[in-house]
Amino acid sequence: MFRGATSLNLDAKSRLAVPTRHRESLQLECAGNLVLTAHPHRCLLLYPQPAWEPIQAKMMALSSFDRQSSALQRLLVGFAEDVSLDGAGRVLISPVLREFAGLDKEVMLVGQGSHFELWNKDAWRAQLAQVMQDESFVMPSELEGFSL
Image (cartoon, rainbow, N blue to C red):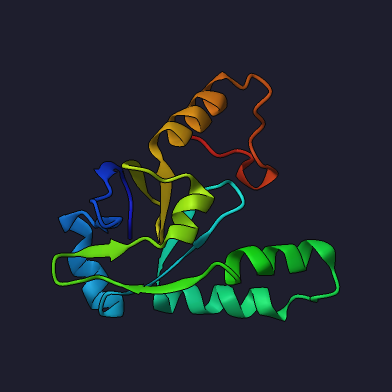
């Protein structure tokens, strides 16, 4: 289970050091083999490879003749890259994915349970501010009756 938001810096070679608290579970769950891909919100998704495989299978089962389905296939599967944790617990972020998400030096790694989101730090702050200021925010119907 991956949770928590961590402010990190990409190093000079565009590597991301995964926080120590997540490295052991990533080694146990997937031997450090991960999938990094694009998300429509202009962030990146980082999945343990076994968690990614059923998602890719569902995406590829969609009709390639449907415009929305094929656009999602191009984005999620087309940008997907196999990456591995190196001996120091780092992941290399390719130039294509860095450009897609606007990643420079400062990034946010945000746990989402089964995976992580990787955001440009300024984009992360902007989308948080937008959610917090949006007075028209409506909870999804699936969460009706939900309380904290």
